Structure formats: C-alpha cells, structure tokens
Amino acid sequence: MENSEALSVDVCTVWGMAQGAELDERLARIAAGVEACRGLGDELWRAGSAQLEQVMGDVDAMVVAGEAARVVVTAEAIGRGETGAGAEALTPVGWVRRFAPSTKAGGAGQVVAVAQAFAVAGVAPVKDAVLSGSLPVRSAAVVLSEAEKLLPLITQEARPTVLDGLIEVAATAGPRECRRLRPTLLATYGVDGELQREQDAAKRFVSLSQPFVDEMGLAEYRLVLDPEGKAVLEAALGPLSAPAPVDGERDLRSSDRRRGEALVTLVRQAVSSAEPGSRATKAQLFVTVDLETLRSGLRGAGVTVGGPEAGTLLAPETVRRLACDATIIPTVMGAAGAVVDLGRDVRLFTAAQSKRLWLRDQHCTYPGCDMPAHWSDAHHLVHWADGGPTDLSNAALLCERHHTVVHTRRYAGVLVEDDTGTRVEWDRTVDSYDRLLAVQSAREPA
Image (cartoon, rainbow, N blue to C red; front, side, top):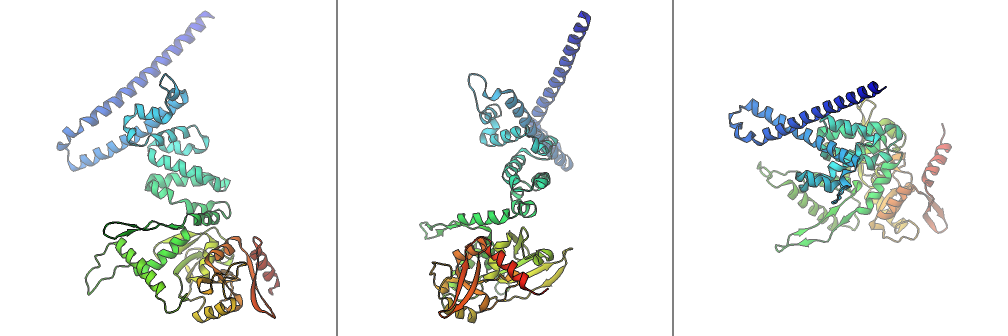
C-alpha cells in the first residue's frame, strides 16, 4: 500500500514538473517574440518586397494571437478571483489596465467582456473564433454586445444561425458591418412583428436641433431620422444631389455640399408652391418585394425601399404608410429573383382629387383633431397594398401624426353618408383594420 501511494505521488510530481516545463518553454518563446519585434526596425532595410509583406502578415498574426492570449490570461485571473484580491483590490477592468498598460488608451473593457463570455455556454462559438485567431478581440466584443441585444428578439431555433452570421461578418468585414446587420436579421429571423415595433419606437428619437451659428454666419444642425424618414429624405435628395457638370466641366462640389444645397432646394420648392399644400408626391420610392409577400398583403417581416443601387429595410406597415402619399415604383420579384412586373410611376391621388377631399373632410378626420386639410395626407381606407382603389370613396384626410397612429395600430375607417353629408368614422380598437379586411374578403365571390 505504501509503495502504491509513493508511486502515485511520484507520478503526480513528474506530471506537474512536465506541465511546468512546458509552460516555462511557452513563456520563453513569448518573450523571444517580443524581443524580436523590438529590434525589427534595425534590420528591415535588408528586406525585399516579398519579405516585407510576409513580415507584415506575421506581425499581424502575432498581434491577433497576443490579443487572444490577453483575453485568456484575463479569464484565468477572473476565474481565480485574482482581480479583486490583495490589499489593492481592483475591478477586472482596473486589473487589465494595471498589468497590460497599453489598454490604458482603451480596450480594457472589451478584453474583460470577451474574457467573461468565455464562461458562457451559449456564446462558445465566439470563444472558438477568438482562440483560433479568426476573430479579433475588438470585433468579438461587438459580436457579444450585438448578440446580447438581438438574440432575445430572434426565434429560438434561429439563434445559433444568427450568432454564426454575426461572427462571420465581424471577422470578414469588421464591427461596423456587424452592427448594420440588425434590421436584416430581425426581418429574416426575428419574432413576428419585432422589426415593425423597433422601427415604430425609433420615431421617438427623430429630432432637428436649433442651429449653431459661427462667426461667419454658417449654421450647423444635428438631424436624427428614423428608417422611414431616412428612406423618404434620401429618395428626395437623390436626383437633386447628383453631380451636375456645366458645359462639360466636372462638378467639383463635394458630396456633402451637393446634399446640403439639395436640401435647401427642396425647402424652397415646398414654401414657394403656387398653392398651399400642393399635392405633388412627397418622394419617389423603389419597393422591392418578393411575389409571395405581395400576394399575402405585405405581411412579411421586411421590405427594401430606396433607390435602384441602395435601399433601406423597412417594416411592412411603414411601407403601407409611405404607399399612401408617395410615388411608388413597385418592383415585384419572382421566387428566383427574376422581375415579374415593373409598375409605372403613378401619382396615387391627383391634385384635383386632393382638392375635393379638402372640401369634403375640411381637416384631419381623426376624432378630436382639427389639423387643416392642406397640412394633411390622403389616406387609403383600404390600403393601396391591399388592393384599395385610389378614389374618393376610399380616401380620408389624416395629419401626419394620426396617419402614423392609424397604420401602427391598424385602425379601420369607413365612409358614412347621412343627412349631414359624408364623414369618416374610425374604429379605434387595435387591429380593427384586419377584421374589416376579413369581413370584406368573406363577402367577395370565390
């Protein structure tokens, strides 16, 4: 028995010594790599182009590996409780800044965030990507931040796919592109209606600051728009801000200057209209939607709206609002992406129709609102996207605020004619519009 115990102790001792020797060897190689980098500048003049390129790649790989190693060390320190131990107890971020001084300029929080995530089973793919060197720590921190906000809004079965997608985009295109994935991922994998709720909530942050005027009289504004506002503004600015050569000479104005001048032009056109509230269409939008989504009444998760080269992903109900008062060019795509039909540029409500609507409704028809007619929009009672006709029997005036409310809450409006004339009555129960559609559908002959 004593011989057995002695043998066991000897085996453990040998194993421990072997592990210690392996660690010592690894630490020695790290120190040698650091020293080699410090003296590199004295020898580079000897390198040819191919060697210079190779050295750059090798050094970059060392940096990525070093960042990953820094996270591994931090994770070990956190796991042991080292960061909060001793007479000078530190937070994990403080510990990293103390022993990795380069992070005092920034990045310590990202190191800690990634290190703490190493212990979370659900984000194991992030750990694997960091340790393999395919995902830099800064990008990994963005992936974790986006995943924390996004995954609760994604269907359960799609969460692994979404996390893998975030990692791939962050690794190949960088953190910025990773952040920009959010609308597309919500539209494709999100819980039903989540994209619409998020875009509706974004309206609360729309703002235009008062001007800051400098000594030259230049005025600076800060404009914040939600996705719908961005789509409308970009659609309007696009043609006006394009380069305009004069007599064959290039337009040397910067893009920002052209856009600023285009915005002023739009405002001048609006305030100098021959008639208040002229019913020229507010924007020209290209709507790209697959055939099945169109057939189902635009009830899909998201629709791309914008110019022919770039677009903004908008939720379906937002597109319905735009369809009421914009010039729409619908591009209907087949299952394989082939163009099935390209609609003509059509003004949904003509100036003559709008004037008659002003006389009929007098003001916004939403209960309790008296916004003047020429400041209101012509709304399709049965939405244009649902096959509603563009005529006065299917129209009602709504101010912009109540137009948004009616679409967001899906209120139904109907025309009522009696001895007092024609008026619009609104059913202000949520989803009353959907119930109205169901009733109308049941009445239609098969």
